[in-house]
Image 1 (cartoon, rainbow over the protein chains, first blue to last red):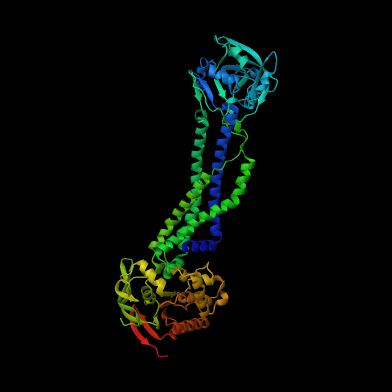
Image 2: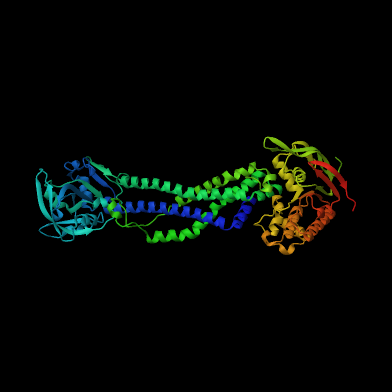
Length: 390
Length: 232
């Protein structure tokens, strides 16, 4: 207890030197908490957007369907099984049919996926009601990324070509009846959405579908032969991998930030011990053992971290709170990166991360304070008193 | 060792390594100090005064011989036990005061008592008493940087005396002070020696200090050349 009291007194007495170290450490802690908050916020937001816009409460995939294998689209569809058909009729699920197609905006060909969905669905947030408009032409829905890439606008007509079930090419004009904005590129990039009925007629494959989106909160899902249930673990695998990679990248940044801050503390300790040799000798002359003095200087160094946590809480908390409330703007054009990421991320600060980082800073600061302080144990008090140790 | 003897230095030799050879700072010193002495080790620079004081103060070890302090042989004392001896029984006064710069006069004086784990009430009483001895009760909240050299040395005396040690070792205590301050300091120490029977041992070559000593031990080239009791 005495060491803590004396160390605090000495730190306060050191003035600006102490506060510079405290500020650097608190800045490191703030940046680490902020960055991990941004990553966690992105993680939560991306998953929330995916649930709302793409995957609902999970999906059933036809056993031959593989979104990463275009060849699987020829065979990756089948008739809606009875168990799931009932869910669809009850508004608990919505089927989607996927086929390859090409569009020709401004006379240039673009390979796309044409997806058919029930216009009256309310399982995902896509404004499929726009597909209901009664018209001689096929109404289509595209996302803002697709609209930007193809320079298509509301009401534009564009030729679309596809193969039917017999492998015959067919073509028609579709009209852009709606353009939706979503943070989920997987339902936007190079995709045209039409009504499921239209697509089934266009392809001539009857009532077949490729995958089914389930409603959020559906507790029990039946096992259906020929169809594979995809839960969040599977559907979020890609975003989890990206977040994990970002997390690893974040750890590298944390290590760099923390190393810089710890280097400042280490340098201060080395300089302090060199400059305060007479004081060290005096402590020993007054009756402290050399290890008591080592402990005093270690506590003094470690106390930087305690003060930095308090300082970070004082100046950092309002900033973190404000950013969490107002969001953190992502760079323009981020939607073109192909990641599920919003224009604004609302950081989510995990208590576990803050506690862990605080403990890491406390422990590492104590270690880097102890390393130079150890030298005191080997000092001759008579030389320390004369300030002659080099 | 008779009852009043508190320090017994026997055949003490201290050598320091100097490159490949050795420098002998003290050679075959035999001295005893009794309780309540007001004595000084005098001699020119490099004669071994500070080295002798450091060994008596258990801050350094003899190369040969022994220093028996309050019945404890310096050879048998571990660094921890030596620290405990200094903490309980010794006070130090240095040429450059060696006050802790961030502490106030009160806190500097209180420091030895903190190490003795005294209660705050006991500490406060003892610190006030010590600061009264040296006449610094009005500077209790000042820091060393706000004090004159003489005042700093008075704080150092209060710090050395606050725990009522048996031995006070003062190494060139007046070297940085003018004549008036030197006499003031010396009178204070003389008074404390008379009242508390604390043993004072000085290392000095200052004539002002020498004029106050009751016993003068002259060291030349690491050997005792004279050991005389001064008639007052």
